[in-house]
Image (cartoon, rainbow, N blue to C red):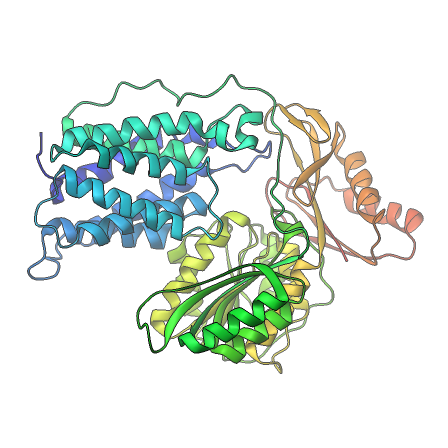
Length: 545
């Protein structure tokens, strides 16, 4: 058994962890809380660790920095590879855990039990810092429990420390349904936390030579029908605004006072690089006047990576565009993530750079750089891609590229954002306008249930047709066309002047004409736009403005 976590052990951990994730990939995917067909936490973790493993393989002959231990180079490569290959929120968090380990162990000559325990605690802190609003009952709870147990072991015996961490993680995973009501109602444990337990068990096997004796699946309550619960955030204020800001402490004090006047949930934290001069600050606030909040940032310094989220739009679906406007300004560009040949053609016509859905941070960064523009807007079109897009935006700074992520949750929201793009405006103002246009859309989607569930609309079974409004299941039907018609009536019952229909790859040929005829008869004053998107899983995406 190795007494230290050296470079060779780290190589074995990466290979063993990746192999274990592949074995448990389907199991982890099945822990998705929502009964939709694209729950892919297991797949995202496999892709993230595959990127880490490839980074090790490609740099095998690199001797690393002179005077630093070999394990420091391996950890740095793992962290960097995972960061650039991170898929989904779970992948981003794993990349930050690896980064925390790399930062804490980079100057340690030999990694024994106590050093690893301290590093795991730093890794947990790095993971928390990667999440704007940490939630207990997730990967964060699992890594915190693992780190706490490792520190309490208080020994240099690496086997004892890693064993304590893995056991505590497994126990914390079993408690996640007690911490997150959505998991309890679904009868599942947290998918990302399960993936982290798999990785820690792989580490124990590397250190001890024996795999931990665990049940095939992590402990969980008996599986019961699922309820899709959502958190809505602030009730008095409609928007969450976040951005990074380069400025000095006096300007930050003025900014805090102004933002406190505009809203609540105000958090302004700095990187501590220069306690007197200019540092980078992360600003978060809930407001009703988005423009005023961003303008306060402009007056205080240089805001970038601006993110605006409407609380009603916290989860995936679709939205509605007006007529798209093209921008020929060469210093600006747009990068869009979208699946489906029709969607790709639509966005390419708008002179956007298009990636297939669920890209890695590295792929997004490559796309941003390929535009040749100094200022780029990224439209992720999925909540799982949002964290990845922000990682790519951070990385782009090293190349002198300013990237703003507009938090679109669907391709139709991206069309809404592109519709108001104006190259004559200042870039920051243009980003604000795009974010407001995307956030002002109501949206819905139709798919087939992938498993039995108890939703707010009642019980659904595999194969049932689900109509989701703002990410919640509102309709359950047996016939796709009838459910689509009912969904449009549900959406337009709350008002609307423009309806956009995006037809998926599995949409029946008659669906477009049936929906257009129904809208013309039932809602004669509504303008209708329809496109063949060709997106998988969702035969119909609907947007209403």
